[in-house]
Image 1: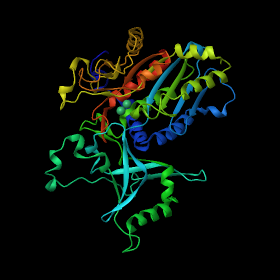
Image 2: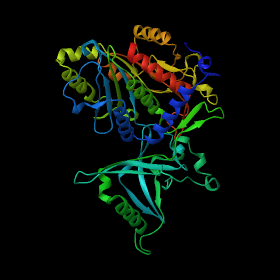
Image 3: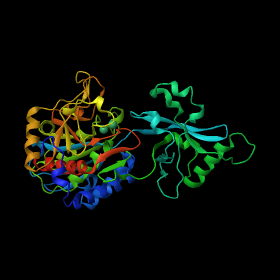
Image 4: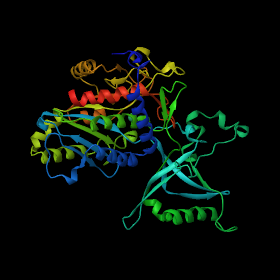
Length: 455
Ligand code: MN
Ligand code: MN
């Protein structure tokens, strides 16, 4: 099962389960483009599987299923094990934020016959990929009275879409001399919002018209945008990809594909030996910072709460629980792309259709900033994956000195637990349309389930 294409298991076989799972994922991804909505939809799904909000339970015992929410952007789920939690948890951790454009706090302006929204990009984006594609707006506006208004425009079939313009080729002589990093500048990523005035002849009347629509339709005033988080993401649903329909094209596979497969895995765990946990975090694409990122104390505090509800809390027991835990940092890997072979060392690269990818380390240059998983832990994972017939591969993030990146792995490993990166190969990572293979999605889900039960 190691380092082989998973064709033997699927090609020419009855793949009903895989196809059903893919359909479910395509639907969930299409409806869950931001961390907020992903969290909300995760709660809805978890409740169908019998999970309860931890704030509503008085005590916990083996077999109980609970979830916890952090500021609407971060969710953790638990299936309580038979062993004391002090013996450690089996944890799946993924992130649910994806590269995108955020509206600035004072976004709206008018220029030469148009009203526009100013944005600030979030995470690592190739800016030129975000122009001349249909875009949607999702987010939350808080009014001074504490009320919350949800915004979602661009994915319903009757909605308008938005976009960012690019220069026509006919006048691009100067633009095309620029490097790709500069061909579209960060400050040029402004969204076209309208072109008609509220009243002809008045100054800034096109802007006024946009404000009137926001007021009429959503009860949002211009100042309210200063206490809002509105994200600009590609419009449209995820789709099957390729004539053989073997892949899935969509926005936000990084890292919602690992988040969804991890979520599905924990939803189906019943009465495990060790307590199962799945934590889905925000802010990975900008360094895992803040209250809802992986560096937040939220996770440690929550384990303490869970132990307390099970009657097992002490500071020492909590420290032991963290030390004895094992974790898969479920995050995507850079799949080998036949059009860009030069960036990979091919025997240590991730391939589509070879199953889940284990990265002992990520990082850049001399492994800078990586988590470096223990070989003993890797041997244990090899054993349980082989036992359950799960396809897996090992990889690095590109050739040495080609670039690099990181995940949340080292952050949880800092709590002194065993952690390894384990995720799904992606093509076009961070582009508005990313690609994964259906086989890998399904194999990752199986691998995550095996880890929670036997890891
Ligand atoms: Mn990621
Ligand atoms: Mn990423």
